[in-house]
Amino acid sequence: MKKIEFLQKLENSIRGELPDSEVRENLRYYDQYISDSVAKGQEEEDVIDELGGPTLVAKTLIEAYNFGGSSNRSSRGEFYGEDAPYDSYGQGPEYQNQYEENQHHRKGFRVNYNGNRWDVRFGKLKLNTWYGKLIVILSVVLIITVITSIAFSILNLLLPLVFPLLIIILILNVIGGRRN
Image (cartoon, rainbow, N blue to C red):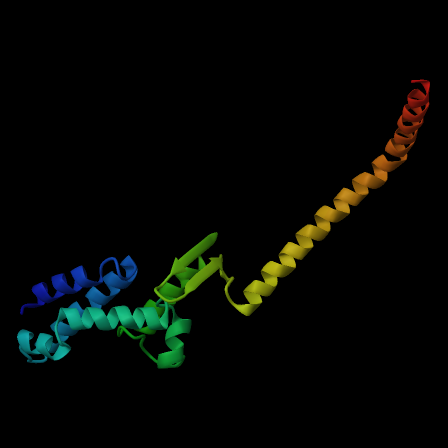
């Protein structure tokens, strides 16, 4: 099997199973890996045979992604160590820093399901962690407290006006009810 055929089959196998950024990153990695091995004197077919074929590589990539979560440094750090000079796809630290900067600049509410767990974020804050849940609960309590205090303030302002009117209406109803 030739490199181009391997890469096409690999892409067809992982497209839709992994995010587009992961697909591009993996295709770039295997393209470079095969090219480097051929440059070192190995035959292209031998390198591809050593990899195990595109179906096996795709299955491994999908399982690794689903097990390890999205490809950010924190999830890889659990398996490769924070001091590893390269990430799991052979990219250097400068690539990883660029990736992390792009992730930190994303704003707003995001939800991602990676096969076995949800990743819920608001900006940089990961909401499905204990501290994320704590912040959400405290925010809800704060909002309820503010709304309640505003409602009671409005009642305090209106009660001196409304209470006498209610008493007058009640008295008029009692007096009007006796006439009939």
